[in-house]
Amino acid sequence: MKLRIASFNVENLSTRWRFSESARAQTAAAMAMTDIVHPREREAIERTMALVLEDDKRQMTALALAEAKADVLALQEVDSLRSLEAFFANYVHRMSDARYGHFELIPGNDRRGIDVAFGARRDLLRPDAVRVTSWREATFADLGVHDRDIAELGIPANGRVFNRDCLTVDLDFGKTTLTLFICHLKSMNNGRDDGRKATMPLRRAEARAVRRIVVDHLGPEWRSMNWVIAGDLNDYRELIGAGGEARDMRPSGIDVLFDRFAVNPLERLPAHERWTHFHRARMPDEERIREEHVQLDYVLLSPALADRVTGVEVIRRGLPYRVPLDPRDPDRSVATLATRADRYPRVGWDRPKASDHCPLVVEVDLPAGRP
Picture (cartoon, rainbow, N blue to C red):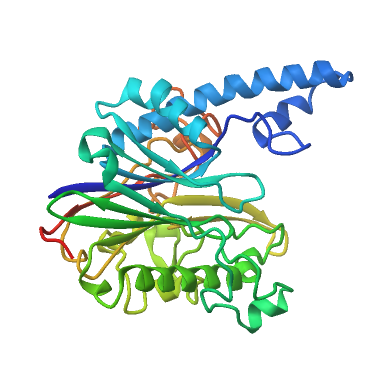
């Protein structure tokens, strides 16, 4: 049974026009240029701007999903089940030949209220063929991942281990089964230049917890079963630099998921294609611009599925024009990047865009047989 599995961080798919008292980044720049003082008028203008920008952005997001042609979806940064269903009804289903349903979302632990979610083609499964388990309440102690590094961060053993969740979705296709473990691990951005290093203990604990959940959920035969860990794991094991060469960046917070456990099918691609996220920032200590092509998004396969991959795709046409799609290209000038014909219509230099992440699609041939 051929199955296309996609993971996509859709970047703040929300019914809310802001997450806190501060303006959303998309509206803050323009609002800073206005002289409107009255709070009520300012709020009305910002709301209108947010809606216009959101509409443009969601057309790009929907195009990326349409291009992915996925059968099964693992999504991150979804505000609510309501926003997910509205987005597919009003955007995706106007652009895609497929019709999606079976949506599942359980509010997790994120402070902004952005959650992981599941969806699949409506005609793929019976309504009763999807079973969901949330691990949002699981503690470091529950999953045996409280260590010295976590304690030094001031986090007790009874604290919740997941910053969002590890949404476990069991699918019954009749002749075969598949289990998805959908994750969105701790972000590297903590406002410091050493954000990756400073937050690595949290991601390492989350990754260890995910591994424990897989083994406990599936039992001693986990190696021979069909399962996938999908999501934004917010860490990388290599950095694709100038010329498209890969530089080893281990240790990583997610190494435990690779150590005689899951398989990353993106590794079969050439180095210059092994990325799903681009980051560009000025480094004050280095007095230069740093550009990084890295893989943050994963569809990791069980040992049973590792040799049954029939395709791997990264959908990049929804990224803004400022992102060089080929790390090997030495010309990063505005004149060159802005005149490429490799993006969706109306994609902008910085925005609108589909997301700051790329959808990753892995096609597998699910073996017949039930556990």
